Image (cartoon, rainbow, N blue to C red; front, side, top):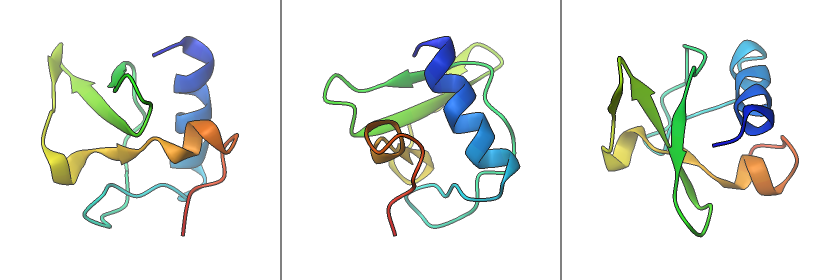
Length: 71
């Protein structure tokens, strides 16, 4: 994931406007993340380990919409 995309995601985290797929709020900023080829999901990387749990994925639509999370 690019630095620009990480900053976009982190801005939404700081604003309290970003949820995981299980609807829990994302509370910690990302230092790195993986994004699927079709950009539909973002998976955080914590301590160098990708967290590839479906419910802990972040909707990739935030990247496509320029920072507007999907309802």
